[in-house]
Image (tube, rainbow, N blue to C red):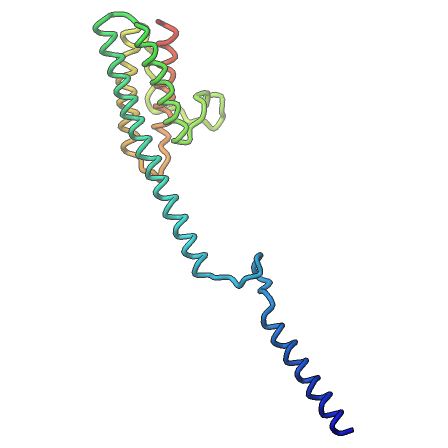
Length: 184
């Protein structure tokens, strides 16, 4: 009888030992996959994602500056073409459309919206009044000077800032482009 009780106590203790070891092997309920969290890996992942975002932001900023230079080049070509030909050719029309697309992309990257902010009650009027050309020649000159102003504003900004003046200037360039397209 002693032997039977002794063997049943031993079997019971072995059973308890097996159950306790099995509980140690259960997955960690704190993570979705059941694996214990690795805080170091998540920190490294966050750092990598932040670095990639910074590189992407810098690349986007550099592309915006290149678009500004492209807009300036197109505006100079348009002004020179008009001075030489005293007219508006099909090449000029294509350049004007390209200029409009480039400036629209710049405005979107700056965070600007459509140029109808005057209806908005919180709209701030620009410090200088926008030029109002009456002839094509004046329009091309204003287009050139306004595009130069836009590129200067783009160069003043950083990739961490938003320039209201640059957005307003891009809206002015777009208005001049539309004026020239309608006047042709």
